[in-house]
Length: 245
Ligand code: NAP
Image (cartoon, rainbow, N blue to C red; front, side, top):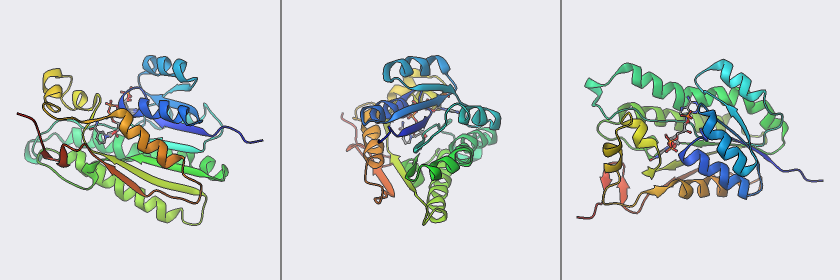
């Protein structure tokens, strides 16, 4: 008898992660969701019958508690991440670089270390990392964030080489501008500044990115989607955006 596959989604309390949890549930997965804001996870869990567990990807103990809350895993979506500020390198805060790197890169390593044995045991495992066009491109003020997403892309490609011959696929989904809480976090809660990011243009919605993740996750086991780069029609490069008016 076939069983429902288990998908684990990090950073599922908002934006792309929440949309991905919904999309994977709709595609037939049983979903486990993690993030720091448990109250938000509980609302989503009730909606899609998911298992919600507190998770801080920067804390070893938190990752260990999270990983102990479920048994099997078929799909790991490493989505938790953020950007802080838009300062030029010379004015930037090293603590912000370290925080972005710890969450966006080392956090992914922590989850892979915790869950890869079970992904292998599943016989058809899959790791999908949420990268960014900032893993391919740079822009003024984006040094720390682009540095972390370039590193994540290197990690993703390294993992795919290291797992060659084993039953785990490795994919990276790299969005451009997507309207979520991302800019609100980047600008420390400044709503006007966050809203201005999307002024006069049509960004991706979280659901657009979730659909890419769900599509990659539902290909047959022998098909590895290496990477998907998806951006709004109004964005030709990280800092080349068409705006009306
Ligand atoms: P978002 O709406 O701010 O969501 C970010 C999620 O990450 C939240 O659920 C947050 O939950 C979680 N998170 C942050 N730090 C965490 C930690 N230490 N441990 C666990 N969870 C953590 O932003 P988003 O746009 O959906 O971002 C999702 C991913 O897409 C990120 O990796 C981002 O870099 C990437 N991305 C976004 C865009 C864009 O334009 N929006 C473009 C390219 C790539 P808690 O705060 O509750 O922990």
